Image 1 (cartoon, rainbow, N blue to C red):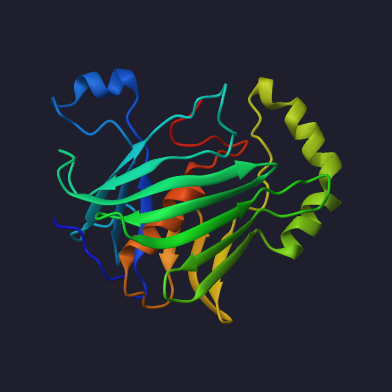
Image 2 (image 1 turned 180 degrees about the vertical axis):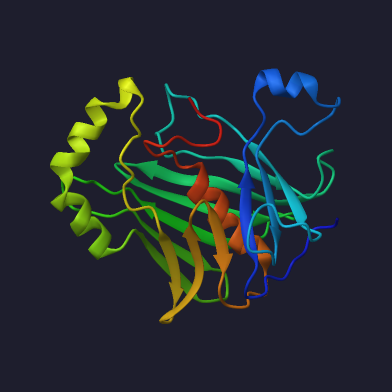
Length: 227
């Protein structure tokens, strides 16, 4: 299906992880080997209704010269890389703060995104600021204050769970929910591994940019491509 520009309230964006090397060998030649965005109005990624897809190129950073928050992403409307939708490039990245430019297919600036990395020892949550060209500013913070309070309250239990990981235990999950707000109105929410558009948005590229940048930043739970 062709790339859809509008984002109606209720749209859900899911990220499909790239297949592993062994799985990729069993798939037809030419199968897209990178992350895929899938979106529609279904409540889950397994919805049987028609869905749109976007294909993500994720360039790995040079660890010798580039900060850990450096990113370069390209979203294509087709797996043949003929219909470029947008590019996300790094304007600056150092000391826990990174600034990204979101560019349209003709190189026009769609938005400028600032991410400030959180620090659990300073009780600072990861935050996002999206400055839309000619439009509003979106702001977000990782998790809820109540969720972080409970996380620290039960931190001794989490410490025990970490020790048990080699024996088959699971890593204790930090608060992950992230909500982007505009003028007091919630626009996009990340929860349970998917993104939901809660307010009509005229340009789907911006909601996709938010999802791509948010997802590609690794956590202790891992990310879509980086070691």
